[in-house]
Image 1: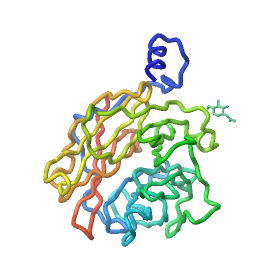
Image 2: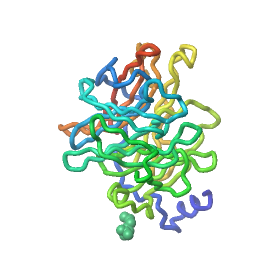
Image 3: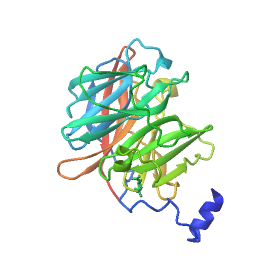
Image 4: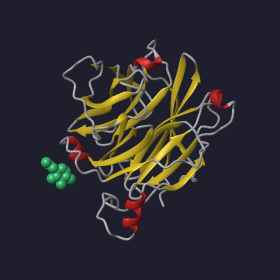
Length: 307
Ligand SMILES: *[C@@H]1O[C@H](CO)[C@@H](O)[C@H](O)[C@H]1NC(C)=O
């Protein structure tokens, strides 16, 4: 890797790196705004992640199914309108932790990309893709389900879709290290994973550790959400956001503290997504779970300052 970077710096190799066109990035020190607070999902557990179908303008939120064991990997996915009203739900059984999900618009339908085939860790071992159908059930016991591995050796893989530039980004584990790889969404739809636009180990934060809670990508940059609930941190607000350059694999900004929804009860950072409004404003969404055990609620905020 060091050799590759040195050669890259010297311009001696045509690498996958630098394949991603330049774009603006979110200034993570700018404030966040509310989309909604304290909304009910189909189940009562904390939300894990969320995503937008930016063409059909739909919002989906993933969580563990009520009553299901932590390690069983049973997910419930709710569809909400943008005021936070629950429109429907779907179950994805023995799928994974729900760390991140992606939405792909296909005409008037939405196809979701989630983990599948949960391991004893509670995390998925592959990705799958299925059509959103309210009331539908996807079960990893179904051998006909498609298993998708953008990186053949990947473990604990999840994905996000950049709806603006149409790319699929997977965060995956190799050995014990976390990595990110980027693909053109149309290549991913063709199951052509031979040409990643980028594939980087995620840099460590100089020994600092904070709980990873989600990611989203827009153009050249990927964003991470870190932190714990007030219950887990002993009341300290430790939620952080950071950005990485997909062309270099290096941290560009952060981690910086985000105080979005600081007054929420419990307030566990859970999920990130990109959405472009009808007016063309691109937003970086941050999710937080709130409320009490047995009555957790969904809260979404966004940043919109680009530099
Ligand atoms: C796979 O994707 C790459 C990159 O977009 C492209 O160059 C190649 O032709 C594709 N392969 C096939 C079989 O379509």
